[in-house]
Image (cartoon, rainbow, N blue to C red):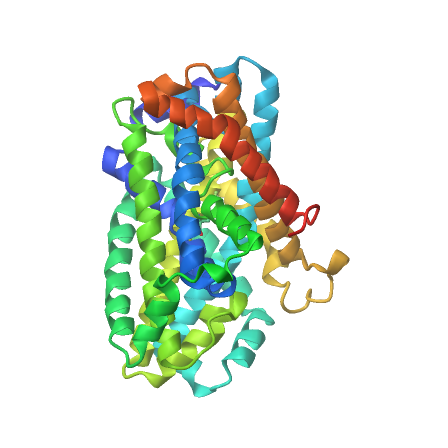
Length: 447
Ligand code: PFF
């Protein structure tokens, strides 16, 4: 059972209904939508991949999302104590701790990439990004130096301050301003992208399915991405759920968040593909797509530095609203378990997470050659958190809700056939699929 400090703090410090939905959208819409989704769509089959992704979002993502939110509100503690309270056993909480570690681990390198996006907004608006047309070497020398460290500090500072200000006065306020702001930026950039000459080829690539391009591998990537994109398996939605008031419908909130996530991914695709096709850039470029390919397009368009600035600010905002949800997981845990005040927990967790992230920030420079098993420090953190801890966390949520927690339906507000479908998906469909992606990403099974 959680301690009184957290419980009484929660009674006074909760999300409003829209505040919760916006904060959860803020968590789900992040670098995953704007940076990863476009390049994996480029690599794994364009529109056909997008359709599969939508299916995964609806049939696997939504049920797990609702389960996480319900566990949070039902348990009213951290990602550890919520499981213990609801199951009456200590063992579940031990697994919950993996989610706390996972969120912490993702944040340690997510803060680094958030920093890159801030740096790129600055050098777009000042125009220094466009001084040298070799964007690959510009990117390489930036991430290879020490400047990323300074930006990582800034990303962690912003995240820590927002969290220290609390749920309503910090996290809710931050998302209430930034999430609608994000939509405005997206629409401006989408109109710009769609009105470029030759934009149609990009739209076609993104939205016209060619099922011959689909492979088993692309289906698994889509499924894994649906999880990552909805911020599942890391206790973020669970932790936010802790601060939701009793009257709010979690089912409606989950649908709103799933829909919001999809919309932001759709629009991000409608910005990136028309823009790169219009300038003859290859879509399947991998992780460097937004940092190395898009600048060439911005350089060539009128007012390019302004559009470049808007684009990278968009990435930065999306990253920061996700970062806040990641760091809140260990912060709530520290408040609950170590009985710290919010301010103190925010301070220590932010500081330690930043320190753990320093080698990630240097993984493209001085530490680039330190790569045991062929992976740098950054790669290992990404690999272990996204490919190991995230599926394990997801599995925990599905098994717990499907088999162990008898009052799940009540907390989630589901009855009748919808409850039955939800349970079916949580008991049989989601766990099997999660195990398959898990084994696949570890290389145990191959397709
Ligand atoms: N959903 C975020 C994105 O799409 O970028 C990433 C993320 C945030 C993953 C929080 C996991 C998480 F717990």
